[in-house]
Length: 119
Image (cartoon, rainbow, N blue to C red; front, side, top):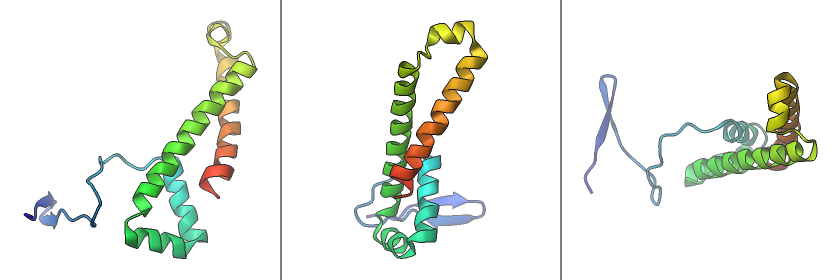
């Protein structure tokens, strides 16, 4: 196996990965993943450290982020259907539509934070 390097400023940094870890796309961690990371650091430091040292932290945070976003999207869509907030409303009352969708998003996020991120 050949060791490769990435130039960062004036330094060459070795491209090292833990065993079994594949190079993931360099997409930044989303909002819910970052919130989960901070929650683990502040309230479950042992779990955080263990996951970090064993290479399980990053995949865990990305999975939490993915689950949370999907759940918020599903809940907002369901609330829009239940309350008749559709494209016709958007066409006739844009501000009302935006207010309704923002309200639904806030409700969904509150539930997702409690059930997925901060559990």
